Length: 469
Image (tube, rainbow, N blue to C red; front, side, top):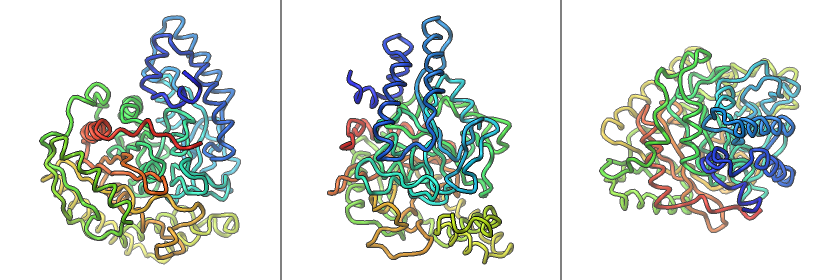
């Protein structure tokens, strides 16, 4: 196996090879670090590389294998951590000059669990400032580029995580998703991204955004996401919103049930949304796989209604409440779009905010009613394919000083509601840019969404496709 093939080998295969002494964790880590060293100057996916620490962890993992010790499910398998996530003793910049020198005081629960599972942490991946947008440029760490076309956005806010996966710079990446931040970059970069049910993976520190943030896996295959989720899911006292239930058997039951007999709704526009024609055509073609697999597919408007005003108000109010105190000292070094978002958020009163939260509850109720009638909902992951980096909106869309969400409106509704949602690669535009199909399930039906994603992956394989790097 050559170096490039090793770098694109699925994590589930790597874990087995390490357990069976067919692969050295040290060799694997060195190979990945060499690829990162070669590609990161171009892609800018990693903002903090932990090369020495990773090799030390790989050596310890190899010694444990040779000594016949009990091994975790991710033993010796490398993983990256998003820079919005705290790690003890490691820079925790959140993409902002404000915290350029901040160092984490403890490991977030997801980091602790990855370590306990035996994973080797390669470093921290890039994010736009405070993860405020679904794009991949940052005032502190610069632009992260899409591996499929340099100069195009990799999406965000888990920008570096998605770019690193597409480029073979690691087999597993941790992402977080407050309005689509796992699914947006995964769709732009042609990888699998999974936002679990809210609370499935504990978070700490908890984001002050009205329970919108989810933690989850970003991988190249569904099986790898199932493997990673099995290691990081489950309750934790750091997060009072974490679900009490232990992880399901995501790995063992992944292919036990496909989509045959399921009642599936397909909404090409959620009733109101603009979608570029090339994206719409590829998603519609992908939906045909579910019919071929035996699902009962119905094209529909799910009746959720237009949620733009709701997300605009809640998003900007949270940005203002959390960050406006930094404007007097730091505005000149902050993302101008973020500053505009904060300033817009300052116009909302407490009464306005409470009324918005009431509308969010009503929105959740509409989604709940839909899933009383259907097992799954299929939509485009995004309205567009990757456009030039440093832009908030594609050139052919109406422009706005802060509202990047206009092309990302398929994702945030399920942050409102906490439903599990995945994005699967489903084809390429004529420019060679990836397009994603979103699969949404009822609350807590994480296994069913993973099973549906695995069935689609088997019907329309994507993992063998690599960007021309």
